[in-house]
Length: 115
Ligand SMILES: CC(C)(COP(=O)(O)OP(=O)(O)OC[C@H]1O[C@@H](n2cnc3c(N)ncnc32)[C@H](O)[C@@H]1OP(=O)(O)O)[C@@H](O)C(=O)NCCC(=O)NCCS
Image 1 (tube, rainbow, N blue to C red):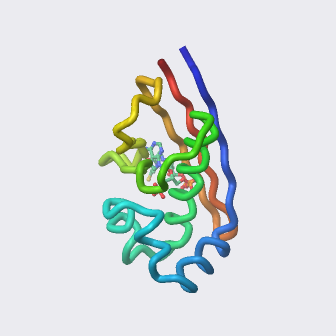
Image 2 (cartoon, helix red, strand yellow; image 1 turned 45 degrees about the horizontal axis):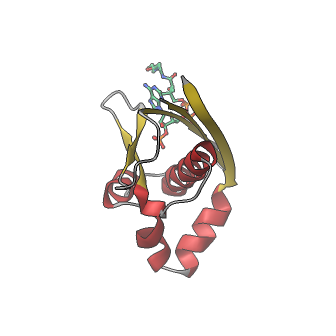
């Protein structure tokens, strides 16, 4: 049964500005795995923005906010993204689905939660 859906769109430039203004922003918001995935990529800020959008989309789907690093996007070998939820709280869902897309200016993510 689907118990939640969330969507978020974000300007890539907004994330880029946040990263460039405050070097701590990256570590506060993104997990080591997310940082490793995006480091050295040509469109690094698109990938970071998409991961930011995935966290926001998750918060919408679950109906509350957690710590940014509680929600991690990880990619399978195929490239398909998955969510890893690091929260120790019982959040009431058994399965999550995420889909991500990004262009030069905008990144977006959709999250669906099942129970
Ligand atoms: C992978 C694919 C979905 C990416 O789409 P795109 O329009 O190029 O790029 P988008 O910005 O919309 O999406 C990128 C995101 O798609 C997601 N993605 C990548 N591979 C995926 C897959 N196999 N299934 C689902 N989602 C995937 C990733 O989250 C990626 O973002 P990330 O790298 O920051 O995590 C697209 O290339 C595709 O349809 N591939 C399947 C067919 C295929 O393999 N084609 C290549 C033939 S040479």
